[in-house]
Image (cartoon, helix red, strand yellow):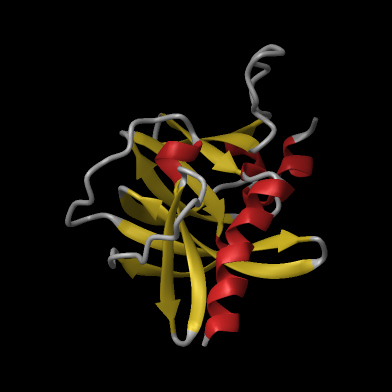
Length: 167
């Protein structure tokens, strides 16, 4: 796979989870919010913290640490919610991704990217678009549409629909 096949955008928002640096194509990031308490939803998946009200819209907030099998973290001063656009069955939906902190927007060219590593049959890396290199450090460039399965995304939409119907 050529690096140019991997690259969707040249600008990436970088953020930290458990000391590791991840990146999302800036074209999929709507905004970054300071951490705000979420409304818990009964029987939601573990990685779904709950929902927030974003200018009248109910937006599910997902704990990226839990999704990636990391320990959940106590929310700190730098914790933030990255509002991203995800494609689900031809429709664009908004999700909030809880991150430890947002770092910067970086310009990453094809010469600074490598294809995702092969991790064997037991480990899933389909959501890793590429490995980026910046100032001698690796960062994991995510394919946000592949981080969550269709079933997981559908589960995040059910509470939204129930809350909308109740109001």
